[in-house]
Length: 514
Image 1 (cartoon, rainbow, N blue to C red):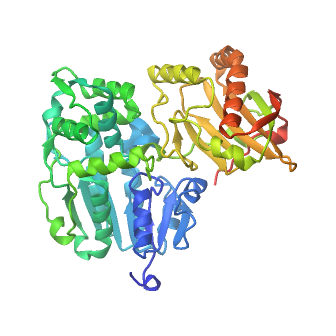
Image 2 (image 1 turned 30 degrees about the horizontal axis):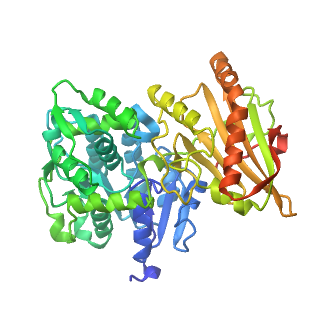
Image 3 (image 1 turned 90 degrees about the vertical axis):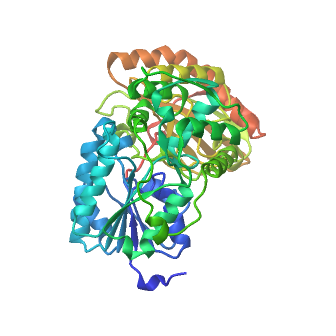
């Protein structure tokens, strides 16, 4: 264990992202003091390490040079683990370029000692190089060209529970026994386990000879994507999918198919699939001598990832990354909000028991548990969402036992969470407006409590109004069945059955933007 009193904090940007969210607890366990940067302090503080005595949480954005300087100030090493593909969609390349330049400037002005970046693997001069890989390499070069010594690690597919690449692999193999595939299924790749990625990232702190250099990192296996599907099927006890390669499937068509079959939306799938049309193998392995570690095979990495998925103990997930978009109107309790008319519909019930009893069921909502009632209607809504470009229900949950602020939950996002009291979900389904679903319990201090469901909707134009009133007749049935299901799952009994609830101003959701 290192002596923390003689070491500056380590800044980890993108702290709620897939890789950073796993790197932080590793650094803490190794004795480092960590400054975790993200765009939402509630989301940061709700992470398992959010209250660790050696963690400092800071709000920052790579597009805001002032916030970056504040975050870097006093730190020695900086992990640059930010990618704008989720938050900026098709504009990610410009955002990443600006962010990298801002980081170089902030690091230089605040006397940082080392920048560490995880980029993408692939020959930048290959004829099939994708815009995504061009952007990743561009960011790496900007950091290397700056005045602060930088280390760039370049990886291909990362195998670990919750990674976007692994989720695509898993869902395709599980759901499609026969695949009509593009020609890239025969392209060689060199995947790497998330455990080994974290080992190299941490090792860069402890090996100053990595400064100013770029390294390819990969696992011990070089294989074709078709072989990867076969390995997955073997580890999952599934028959190997039968593949029919055809030359007409473009990355665009492939991404749309992935969107329909997997939880990964086309906006993310397309940049990833564009990078599958060229070899992604290590051209050098010098880092294995500087930072030696046992490299995990593809078979073992997939087995470990499947174990975590089956146990529903996924530490971080690709879907949990990105900024929480708090609707402006959620800050106001007055239905006369100047941005438009906020429509609402709520139902409540009174039960014999405590909020803690109810919370055991509430916190498990969604995913494999479902919505405690009218599940067929929820499934139909999920199918409609997928075919209109939304995420549907296929994202599921990161964990069946716990929720955190910022978690993806089917086609919702956990916007606010107060254990045994309140859960607020923001709709990420395709709707002509913004929607919130609030589940709340209130202790009556006499061995009884209330539980309520409240939907709020800010429509966009006439289409939004028609959408709300078309669904309105279903609300009574859906909410009544959900309340009954929650109470039954809690083992409680009704004192007053579900009935219509009209919220007052003080009952409306008030969310912080810290």
